Length: 339
Image (cartoon, rainbow, N blue to C red; front, side, top):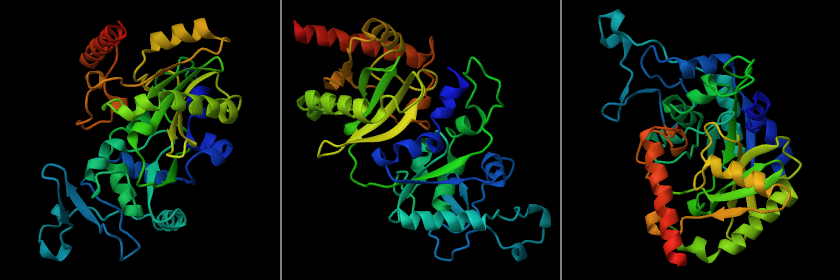
C-alpha cells in the first residue's frame, strides 16, 4: 500500500469528483486545537461549552462505567479548589459553522473524519446510531470513539513507502446527510484491481437476507453498470475498494472509497482470492458477486466495542481462524447445495 493510495481515500479528496453520485456532504477543516481536544485523555471527559442554550446535550461529564451523565459541580459548592474539574473547552466559531451546515442538510447528519466514521461509539447516542442534530452530539461521538485514533495517529502505518508523518497535515469533518430509511442489506463493497472490477461483496455480512438471492442478478448488473459509467477512470488508484448503496428504485449511490488491503476487510472474499482472481481475470471482464446464501453463512455479530472493520483479523489471530473456518463451512454448504 502506498501513501498516495491512502490519501486518495480521504473524503475531502474524492468528494468533489463524485459529488453527483454520492450522499450530499458538507466538509469543514478542523482547527488543531480541536484535534488536541479529541486526543486528550489526561483529564475528565468534558464536552465543549455550547454557544446555544437549546442544545440537547449541555456540558456534562459522561461516566462510562455506569453509562450515566453527571453535571459539572458548581465551583462554589466545594471548598477544595484542587478537586474542581478544568473549565470546559469551547469552539464557538466551529460550532456555529457546523450547526449552520446541519441545518442546510435537513437538520440531521452523520459525521466522518478524513477516512473514518465513529461507528464504535454509536452506543452512546440516544438513538443508538450515528445520527446527529447538533455540534455537541457530534463531539460526543468523536470523543468517545476509539476507531478514530486510526485517522488521528495511524493513517500511514501500513504504507510500504512511508515518508510522511503518522498523520495528515489537516483533518476534516465531513457532515453527511442522514437518511433514516436505509436498509443495511443494500450496501455492497466493490473491489477494483488493475482498473477492473474483480469482486462485489455484501457489506452487512452478519445477516442472511433472502431478498439478495432473489435480486442477485439485478444487483450485480446495476453495480457493474455504475462502476463502468461513474467510477472507472475517475478514481486515480489502480487498486482500491469502494462501497455503494442500492436504492429501492435501483439507483446506485457511492458511499466511500477504501484502500486495497490494510485495514479494509475483504468481507466474503479473502485478499488472496481477490489477488488471484484479479490476475487471472485481468482484461477479460470476469467478476464474482458474493452474498450470504444461507443463515449458516453469516459472519460474527457486531456486539463488540469496535466496528467489524477494526477487529483483529490478522493472520494467526483468533478471529482469523474463526473466519477461515466460517469460509470453509460456507464453501462446503455451497458445494453440497450444488450437488
